[in-house]
Image (cartoon, protein in one colour):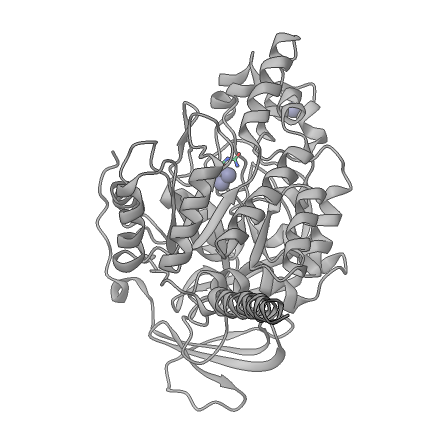
Length: 512
Ligand code: URP
Ligand code: ZN
Ligand code: ZN
Ligand code: ZN
């Protein structure tokens, strides 16, 4: 259990509560407009030109720079205990690193063990995070087992605790995995209470059998990890999750889509009108699975996560194209870091390598480099996939993910012309390896503002422990559920038309 840290009141932390960003190019997910942004008491109060503002306001000149919504990373595991290891990135270290890279909010996962109370897990994660976070955060909750109590707790979490998303695992057999019957019932419950169902989509039973065979045949090194879970094992599970969700009209969010074939399944379901969202990772677009067969165990093991990085190096560009064309909608980091020493737990058995990689700090730069700098997406799409879409899906838009009057002043002044070279030697994360080592990224956050406080100031990190807040995510996100409602009504109309037609045919037949 962690030691409590005293929370510093917000008014004592901000040097001043009035800030003006002048001469920047303001980018939202639907517009690029030259203008000034005036911030007071943590909120955006005015936007435009020739603003009348009080004296004593701090002015930041953003000429030649982009003014974008702070990044929202919808997928992190801070203070994570997993596979016998513990992440060195706790909620302080991890959110500090997030800020350094231009992320101003993240959504972590409270994951109960099988048989444990979901509400207790939620409370435990709040305790780990509340006094430590340097930026705002929210929580998803894992449903790792199923019972009447779990069903009830899901509703309580939605109604009373600001949770609107639940993650189910189709992998990690005997640890977190639930079966198809359970998935069906959990999806049904999510739909009923206005929550979005998230899935870790891989066929856990097939993986377990493949792994046994590989180990028996002498494949024990990190290369066995991907061989035990090739991409069709991911695509099959994504398809199964889509099919099951569709039976009960439950909106679905597929976390960490790592392969072309899995992305194609998400894209096809969307084109079919299903409310499905796909998230890929900074890791998936910034590196690839060739590293997992590196002769150095530590190097290879550092790249192990699930679903695996794809050994086909062309995967990353294809995933960026899916992001650019709305086949996929969101980028996360799935930040789950473990030290090189902890990765050694799997030295003689790849199934024991703690799964997880870094990314919370570098996600924004990696997506900019691979997406915008490469010419595959424009800055508005960058905003969509790094903040706005997550804010809409998890129902915190336009408070977050948007630069508009009334929104939280979570803003990044982004210099697209500066470059930085990613390295474990300079990163702010707690682990000793960086999967993007040596990558030169255009796009550097020069200022990072959270709730009106300048947390990165001309490139210098000024994070304050406990400054961030828990942001409740309310149920029934209109962005997610409006279409679900219309589809259901349409389905009912169609069923009625078929029933009416059948009844009319029966009457006609009786009259003959
Ligand atoms: O390998 C991964 N992805 N580790 C974190 C846990 C999860 O499945 O998201
Ligand atoms: Zn997962
Ligand atoms: Zn190495
Ligand atoms: Zn994860």
